Structures are given as structure tokens and as C-alpha cells.
Length: 397
Image: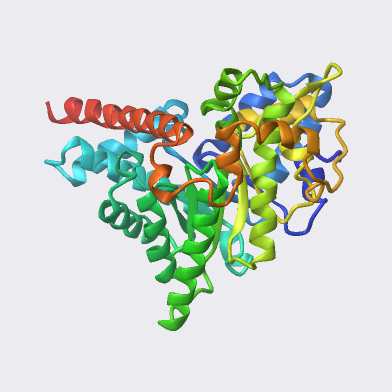
């Protein structure tokens, strides 16, 4: 059968991984919805391609190597499988009769994480703990509360041996990552947009590993990935706006190059310094459009890398629609065009993001992209709280 774009991308490097950026609980319903929209002549081909990406009945055969989730994606589980989550919440209310809405939300979120992780447990076991991790995120509303994040992280880590803890790229978050690593708990650094954050994470993980080894901690079931929320840097922050204030107009392609420049530099430094983490890219876009053709530079120009691409349902649909004929070749080592880099470096917003010492840890918490993403994630979290609160009111009056 014909290979999907993501399968062809995986062939560019033996260490390249594709992850599912949503809960495994919704994969089947999403796949069925995609098949219903497919033209009849592609139906069987697409069905086989989707089954190769993830087969719920045989997860050990899946091409997806792991899973990432976040509050908006978890809220999506409620919207997609409301009856399942309603049943889940009602049972939790019965088990905890006088529970408050915040506690009930956290119990519900942990149940969603646990069930998703269990669906990938065979991948985890059969790969000798190399693959099959599911990221569970600490509450984005507490991204500056070190103790609260550690407490939640420890709870999440006990749900299943393949749960990886998603920790924000706040100043306090890197202290949390160092601590968790020292205990042999896998981490995924999220809400990360600039090189100083990415390197702060790499160093925190390295220091945590050194402590773990000194203390004799078992690291055989441990992994670290560092996420770059790529298009959120270019689209949510002040890149274009600050450029315009200085009379510098950036094209869609130049914005994509800005994002890629940060990722490529981080990837190179992590490799050169032998940091024990793997780079992960998320928030990708089908972009730019060049000569009337849609590209995905976030895939094309990072092909051949020993990295993780985590793909949400809508993005996967875009790759099937626009990249069906795209042939990937290794481009991870190709440099950003010098003229483009020179132009970008004239914008302080980019210069600070591209230089390793461009920002101090104290500045991480106020970076525009982090603030905007944290607000979005917090709103989604409140959406989950509202859902369980309504069930609480229905069941308890």
C-alpha cells in the first residue's frame, strides 16, 4: 500500500519519531471522521494508512512512538467523547461523595491520562522502554508554583510507568525538571519558544541526571524531550509587530525561517554537547505557500533529524491533503539562508530568542508567547473544571 507523508518522513532517519498530539481516547472517532470525508477512491488506502499510524487493537504495531497532551487537547476529549467522560466523572463523584470541583477536575484529568497511557503500555514494554510514553501536563495555572508542580508531577508519574511529565518553561519549571530528572521521572518541557529556554532545559536535565546517577537512581525507564512550540513563537509573540516597528516586513516564509533557525540551532547544540535530551517540535503549520504550492517547512526542512514530531489531528489531516506527493530528503543540517538570518537579527525580539544568553531565566515567565499560551491553556483547564462542576451539580444538587 502507498505510504503516508508521515511514514515517508520517518524513513529519513532511524531515530526520527512521530507522536500523536492528542489523547489516544479520541483516535478511533477522529479516524472514522476522516474516513467519512475521504473520496471513495482513496478510502481503502487511507484506512490502511491510519491503521498503520495507530491500531487501538494492536498498539504494539503502531508507528506513533508516543503521545503528547495538553489542557486544550484534554478538553477535546470531553467534546469528542462526552458520554465516556460523563460516565467517568459520575463514577468519580460516587467514589468521592463530597468532592469539590477542583479536586474532581484533577481526578478526571488523571483518569484521562491513565487510560491513554495504558493504551500505549505495550509499545512501552515491547520497545524496552524506549517508546510509548504519554505526556501528562501539570496544571498551567500553577506554572510559577514549584511545590505545586512537583506535587502534581509525582501524582501523574504514579499513574503508569510510561507517563512523562509535561513541565512549563518558566523559571520555576526548570527547577522542577531538574528535581524530577534526579528521581528518574521522565519529562517533556513545554511552553518553550526561545533558545535560552531550550538550553536551560537541556542543562537542568543534565544536572538532574548527574544527581540521579550519584544517588543510584534507575534510569532505564527514563526519557527527556524538549519541546519547541514552533509556530507559536512566530505567530503569537511579537516577531512581526516588532519588525514592523523598525520598518522590517517579514514574509510568511521568513517567519517560518525564524522558527526553524531557533530549532536547528538548539538541535545542533544538544547534539554537540551530548545533552541527554531529544528535541521535539510541535505547533507546526502547513506553510508557506510557494509558487502556488503548499509546503510544510517544519517537516521538510527538519527531515533527517534525530528528533520527535508531535502531530495533532488537524495537522495530520493537512499533511494527507497537501503533502501527498511530497518526497522528503534530509535537510536538518542545511543552514538558514544568510540574508534571511541577517534580516532577522536586526529584530531584537528574534536576536534575544536566537542567542543562547539572549534572555535571563527571570524573563521566561513574561515572554509574550509563553503568556499567551499559558492563558489559552488555563482557559481550557477552566473549561474542564466547568464541565465537572456541572456534573457535580447534577449529581449532588
